[in-house]
Amino acid sequence: MGMILGFFLLIYILVAIGIYKLTKRFSQRKWVHHIILAILILIPTYDIIITNLLGAYYCVSSPHPKTYIMEKVEYPKSIYWEDNVYPGFSEEDRKLMITNYLDGVYLKTMALNGNDGKVYVYECSKDSKLYAQYMQEKKIQNEQKKSLKKELTDLSNQISDLVIGEKIYTYTKEEFEQLSKERQEKMLHLYSVWLKKEHRDKLKQMIYYKYIINTPKIQSLIDKKEQLLLRIRDLESNRLYNKYFPNFTQQCIQNEQIYLKKSMPKMNYTVRFNEVKLNALAQKFLYSDETKVIDNNIGKIIAYNRRYMPFFYNIAPDLALGNRYFSSWAWEICKQKYENIAEKSFPYLKYHYYITKVPTLNEKLYNKYIKKRDGE
Image (tube, rainbow, N blue to C red; front, side, top):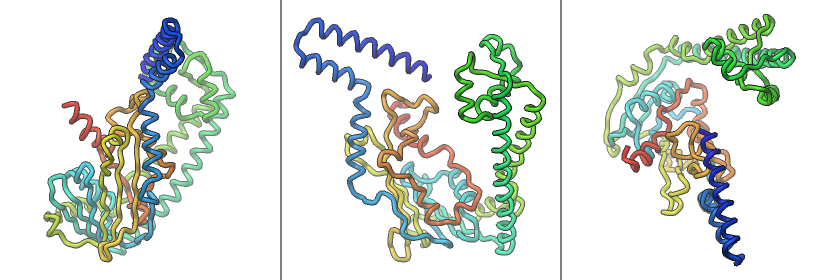
């Protein structure tokens, strides 16, 4: 897709040059030349200019600072998560939130606003002694994983150094396609993973983009690396958690209670996620949302984040993944690092097994705005 985009961009540049030359041929007025040149430049780039001008304006506008964390809470006990962007948590999202955050020790009660307008409350707790044993084993497991990753890095460097010192066989496209699928995959894996960046860059300059190394010494190191990867994946899995708490998530779901927002039990803290409605012009070029962490006992905001994300530019659309509403490098708009303030405010969250929300917020916003607009 990138090549197709580059092809059309090249055609536009050639056409623009032709139009500009014709303008100079049929008009001797310099101001006409300047206007035509400006129009030809702005057609593919006007959104970049407007996006950055609006971004500069919002970055100096209130609130300041865009991100702050005034207090960190070790044992929140109960939290109400309110997602008003999509809005609300679906049944699948609620299950993921329980798995991710409701640990039964630091957080024992979780409330979530549903996508049906109701509030779902889950209350669970774990045996403190059993939990302490789990955390102790988890700590040992993390140290093992750290050691294995270091060993993996060292082994990758050894492979990379050996590969660059051996003869590298290159293939034409036709020869490569005659190889078995298994061999093709191994070659692709070598090209993308096994080599240091500077070695990959060197290989890119060679005859063709697929390579194979076939020496016993290198193959033995490759096999060892694959074994290390399997061990690391096992440590990163949820196996240890399931060993101690095999049915915890399901037990929490069975304890589900449903309320209207006005009648729900009081939580110690609220994490509220809202879309920020910008003016009519800005909404065409920027997306904005904000997260607040509120201490409900004193009615005070203890953490805050607002972010501004640009949409994909006309000259650089979302060809890599598709179905995304805003650009993935969005936090650079205000030159401020985006913070997950919920995890920063409640440090216990970083110790737990984490499953990403599926689909992501970016994909959900695409479904909400783009698909709805296009009638898909």
